[in-house]
Image (cartoon, rainbow, N blue to C red):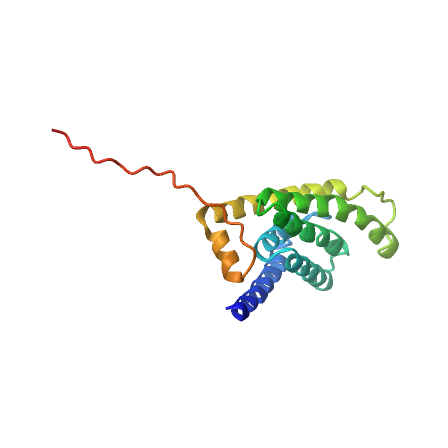
Length: 189
């Protein structure tokens, strides 16, 4: 079973990387890639922080190599991917903390780290330390909202826990209450 779950994790990682590369141009404007943040959060919740970090790194490298995206593809993804998964685990499976981790990791840390990378390595001038913060935060809020709604729907139906169990990932299954009351048989005399 463990060998099977390791293979499934690798397959899921490969699919997440492929989806990340393909859907990243959707809703993309310079300095904003909300769908990458969606992938980061989903990967963090389903596979964990280290797989999410690897996924974000692979997506960034492929996007830089094939699409000519600047190093923002890495600086704007890796910190949020890792922090999203770490906060999700630390909160014992609270989805909002996965989103908060992405917003802080990418929207603040990644945005600030992007400044020296873009000025010193990429040669862009006229930037300040906070130049990327507004666009990165906006992108993480958009992608995070989509991920929160998507993962929330999976969680409500029980599919999220089922996927996590099948992959051998940490499951934070909250018991669902069945609000349906049995219908009493009414017989009229």
